[in-house]
Image (cartoon, rainbow over the protein chains, first blue to last red):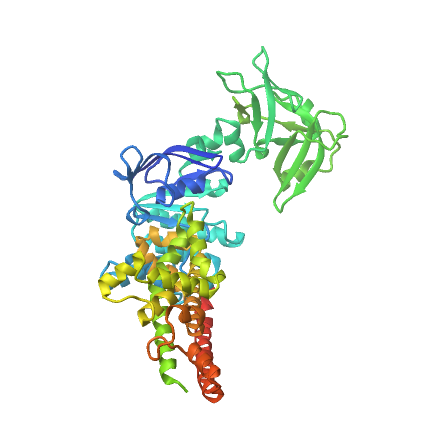
Length: 361
Length: 221
């Protein structure tokens, strides 16, 4: 089970140049819109012809510009789940699923369709037309239709983006189950990092048509190698950084000096930290005599509440926050917030050394 | 009432509609999906009969299909006679004259089919031909029916091209519109009226049937 992709394509002013490989475990293609995710998927499926490169699936060359090989989409045996599902509106559910099974004898085709209907929990919907189905049902039909041809690889283009939030959880669980039994390579395109993290083992981060990072998901989230990757993986706080002779870092935009826990070869240009890694404490924490580092007084500038968490816009320093600007955004649980919300400011903010990202760019 | 002229007109219209399905569908498919940069030239040529007076078109077809010209000579050497003033000549002229009335609705129908649905068919292993018959055509039934109806109706009603290319030979090229004109010229208003009423009723029934069917075909949208 392997899918190796190395392609280049210029379209208008946009340049796509990506190289990655997927094995049995689902591979996530993560990136903002316009980063080239969909185009990459379409090139693999044979709907878009790259200018240069190679695409090899389980040893079969699907595309090779050097050897002038370009298998048409219909011969690639790749299941593609479109973002809007692209069901055939004039065919009912079982006809949609049977669409790719034309060459099978009647009995086999019926059996295959029945299998997919049962696997996708579509009982009772076989005779229904797509326009009468809910978004979640349409998604399951589209997935069943793609899987019915027993594809060698499965490409999922933002499969949850067209669905209501409350439907996503259940469908995602079902998708993960399905992928667990699928015996081919899976590519999962998403701009939602949490979704990609839950579904995939490995992640490729795309930015501006290039691979910004790739590897095991934990690795990428724990040590984003560049600003771009930090941003794509959801990091919200950045500051220009300057290395000091004593090994510490001066965070120029935050106005503070930071002790860093890690070695770095090249002097970092930026320092960053995730919002939920920032700890906020009551005021007395600063003088508590504990040997925690990187603890600074801070003032609250603004806050946003969600049901279980609060996002605090903080200004580092003990002077009252006169300007509307803030330095860092911290995300804390409601129960933590209850402990210091009534206490006088300045509070204290902790930017733990082992949570800081030192970015070379 | 001139039944001969009525049957001739119907025969001509059915033949033209049939030929335009065979010729117009591939042409409309090409016009819709080709990425050739000079495609607009072909589109302009196909649309010419909409703007040209029938007499201009009829004149060129008459001369072009005549025995002095290349196309006419080839026809003559194959079939042993020339095209003008025959039913065959009328047919060729009518097909050309009605071409845009078939191709444009066909093409509009194809264009209305979601591109991703077509691509989905490809990824499921369907060839281009199979995709056309199993996906594109069923989803553009409305455009196809409109094209057929318009070319049929347009042929029944044409006058100028028929007169230029076909002349007025009873049973061969004298169609309903020319017959009615003849009757009126000869002051036979009763006969002209009868023929006109039959034509009017027939046209209305055909159009009503087709638009009624078309409405049901649109239920997926």
